[in-house]
Length: 136
Image 1 (cartoon, rainbow, N blue to C red):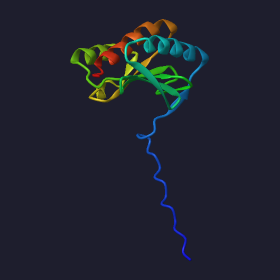
Image 2: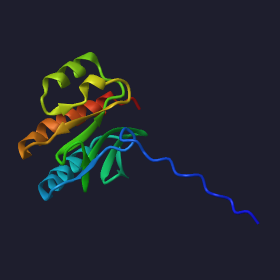
Image 3: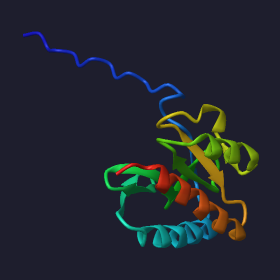
Image 4: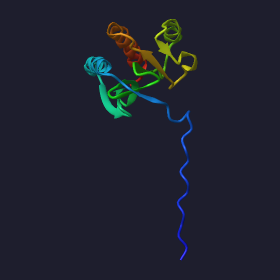
């Protein structure tokens, strides 16, 4: 009797699986504070996502806040602009804490570096812009 071989698993390319970084206790606290604030906004819910909390307005995701790990650096939050206006793109290009603006097209993610506790106010501002860009 012949045994059937399982097809070999396709290995993920570096483009498919980004590198994740563990976050420190301070970033866990800052992220939890931002999450608490954002969850008070109308229509926002959260879902777990690869060690992060995916923040949704209705069914559309607009941000990911780290719980145990982050992408790009241990101090990043992720923002998704599905309908970014040119003014948002231009503002993002001027903010040195933002990465990924050059590829900012519909559905693309950018990151914001929370390099110190005082930058959470600006991070919340960018999260708010992503929230506003999401159409219900």
